[in-house]
Amino acid sequence: MATLTYHSVTLTNVVASAAVSGRTLQLGVEGFRAGGGRGACDIRVDLTASPPRVVVDARLSGAAIAPLALRLPPELGKMRGSYSAAGHFEMRGLTAGEISSSIHGQAFLRMRNVSFGGFDPVAALARAQGRAPDPTRPDTMLRSASFVLSVEDRRVTLAESPVLIGGTELRVGGVYEFGGTADLSIATDARRVWDSERSRTAASRGAQSAGEPPPSPEVPSFHLQGPLNRLAPVRPEQASRQAP
Image 1: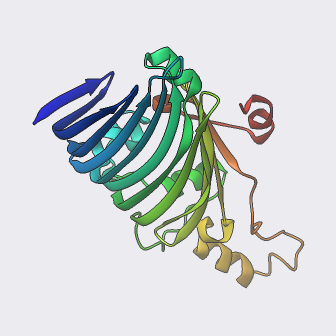
Image 2: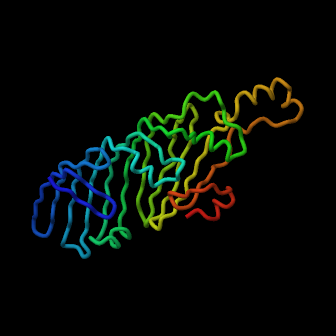
């Protein structure tokens, strides 16, 4: 068994086999460990092309979220849980520069039993929108969520996906540029985030009949932008101007 390291990615307990046919190299990685999970991948390198054409099919299951959380804002640094992923990628070249400029493909990601270490992302979102969190929400766990990520033109695009946290459904999507900046969009059903007790009190006082509008059932997408470890909220009009 071997250990392979490429930039910040380390694979341990690697079991692999290789076959060469003409100027084509086929590498089968039958097993490896990364982030506490188990994975496998198939790599095909076509040396008849210049630069070489590389095709990768990879999969990883049961990996820990904790190491990834260290790259996120401090509020999310105590995230725990697991994830599994599978992806197909194609690229031209073998150097880091060639790969980053040519890689394209798609990956599927699933997260399970994610806790946030005392941080309540839904409550934080409500406060950032000038709303009061609902104290009756059951918990802040993310039981399961699935995502589709596309890689092309030196960016990773997260397709808008539903995320259910403690009974509140969010819709999350965004873009990460290879240069290091991200734009994360979060939309939510405000009726789930609004303080239910406050809403009941307002209704009992006839606030709506007095002309006071009820909480809007939908709010504009909330944007976080910046480096992954320093994401900061921006106003919708700023997000539309700054979005990649």
